[in-house]
Length: 337
Image (tube, rainbow, N blue to C red; front, top):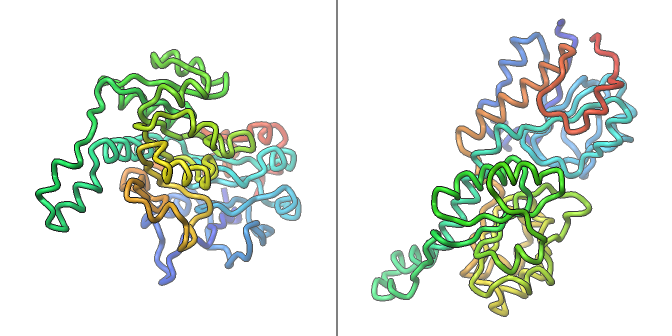
């Protein structure tokens, strides 16, 4: 391998002061493997552009990658996501162009599942209410915020992929009943984990906590909408660590305002960042985090290793571990740099 192989890092890897947003993201591994890398020029709009000089792109944000964009970049053979999400990437279109897309589920799995569990426990234990009571000196009110124990409760997981199944593994020793909703291809995984797969309306009706870990696709957009929220228990909580677009936010706002659910924990919103007048910002029974709750040291190190492994494998003509559009590997572009 020569240093002719060039990896472009999307510019959102950098903070305004020029430092790397996540810290060490494994760029020395690319250099040691004989690859060059550089930060791409500033992007304008939501669709990535300026791909012509690059053999691979390491995508840190959520810029859209279209077939049209890669068709004008004959060197490009790989788009590597620094994370698990791939909404905005035309997987089939890139496969038709011979450009493989990879993500990093092995680095995301445990940190994101723990983030979901953190929100479940924080909601159940009324963490924010108790925090405010303490900081505002309202110790006499501490009996007003009694939580609910998690043992014996039901958690319904929408999206039983790597994160959903990891969350089930974390929950089961706590005496929790776990239900799942996902496409048929995930049913064997759920069965192996001892988790019952149920229809969406049943999951809504029986769950004390509904947790979204699904990918955002055209079929999953607003999977939690007004009808789903009407089916939830008034004592139930909604947790979303997947993508903001999985939830119909105006419908969620109405459900919270009307007291039809007990609260929500949201690490993701649609859009991000939210507008200053987003109604969800004003609810005392909603925990919001800025799509960063899983950004722990082990998340960064795990994702960095997985992403750079994929880049190095594709550069050397090897099959990467987590191709999202494996058809691209059948007619990949010229692999001689």
